[in-house]
Image: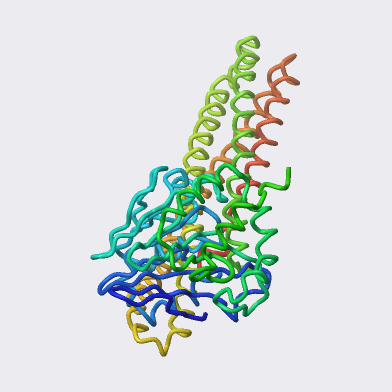
Length: 242
Length: 202
């Protein structure tokens, strides 16, 4: 599992992904950690197949007992089917996930971890002095969906929005936006069901000060590529399967 | 999932299925008892010896139904235990892998408590499973005992039926149906016992 520090300030953001030992028939996914002095939040901790390499990678940054929080943007298996394993590994942790998915996500096993349901209008996660905002992103693509915005680091972890279907070992960051478009077009057209939801999200996100847009699959957008992505997504017709 | 785990799931699930068949048969015995009682009543003195037997048959059917109901609850909890054991084993194996992959990580040592806890939980489930299997086998033995008793009653019924004159055929049919039901119960329960006995000492 590769590890890339994408922000270092009063706290850190670390991206995990491109696991070389991942079975070939499962989609590659990006996991993120927000590390403060004594706590660690894992965003989109991943599928059960990825648990061991992910946990092993996290142990380079935090001890198990300081992994106090998990976040799942929505209910998909590549996002959080590892929940039952984290549940047995962590003795004092919370899972922040959409309220509407609680009884569904508990199928993965959630006995010792406290489920903190995120209401439809969003909320915050407080990690020592860091306050992260939970931005509603419903129907992008899941009916109950949130993204995580860090105003201090100016990072938006955007779940499936901004994702791309890439060849194994793709670079961590978008290097040429125009060339990157074709890697993400079908994903957004097919997985995102609602133009109305897309517009509402873009309007909300344009008001945020974002340096890094970090999706759950594919490459991370930096600087001007964030605005380029929002403009491109704004113009894209989604929900093409009907 | 390895082959042994698969077989364990199948064995536990098959008990519920076999027992639901036993339940159907026990209800049939109960019906046969009611039928026999009515015939014996009509036969009067000719079936005097048959009348108390009908009460035995009915009582036996009732007890079998109660026993199977309680075993079914037990079998379901055994299934849940199998699921738990499976989850704990997966966790333990994954945690072992984490320790292996993370050996150079600065915080690798912090994985030891979860690893030890997972190991203990897994072993606890395995011991509990063996204990529960043994108890379930004991309960199944009690059902077998009922089935054997039903066959004895069926044999007695045949003797009593032979003295019931024109009611002979009807009462013999009752005896036959009790005997057949007892056989079915015996066979089904025996299959449960064979499936489970593999895990008593595994």
